Image (cartoon, rainbow, N blue to C red):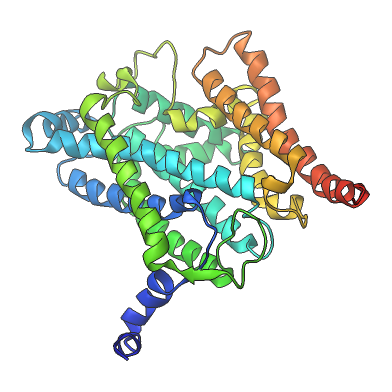
Length: 386
């Protein structure tokens, strides 16, 4: 009776329906905990970002000094800055694991197309937010990374030059650019939070997928306390790993050149973005034509968005798809290879390896996924029954 009376309250009913009594497939593993962990990362980034903004000065003459002042003179400022910077890296680690888990178990398949599309939108928003946040410290990599990436807009036919000047707020990356990026970096996390709410609503509309890849309409249990405990294990493990990086290797995931103030007159020997951009960056530079490179980046996300329609098959989980499983792990290896290539100079043999690795990425989505979606069910029907 007490439980029923609580759920009559609108807010408590919402919490009860989506966080307590939400029916969850009983066979979910720890791999299904990365969604809630990504939400925790978003809250962490928003909280630390708000406090960092209190000490940051969005001006080209003062931005670098304001960050150093925060690190050296503000009580606990070094912890806030390192928590925000390394939290972004861990956020991407969690989201990439969440994405590849979805690829492995076929979480994109019908009727979860809207859920998958919202996930791709979230990934795009994350990348844009992280990129403009990387510009704010106004170090050498910040400045030159902004110059290189924003200049890609010049490849857009007819309107390219005007678009670049609009992004810059002038004729070069300067104070107007920094102010625009600071405003956007403050705004976009709230859009991320709104899109995350829609993502969660889409998930709860049709329920979670499961390791077997089948509809689990019967064997379900309440989310709390069974899967809350599993999520809690992930949260504690995440906190321990993040703490180890914060206190023992806080700069391991960053670039040392970003501790040099931005200098438009001195180009770094090798411009390298943050590690979580490296695979896409490797695809971009593997194509000598700027417009074709930009089109290839758009094609990466187009392939991800089209996956529910490219891979229509009654077999969802890779546990029952041996051929798909081989292709999946080659995609994982290809992603690692592209990330390594993105750190190397633009010269042979790295350029040639990057071109082959980029080609395989698109072959996976545009060839293997559709072919295996038709081939594997046919092979099962041809298998002799004993």
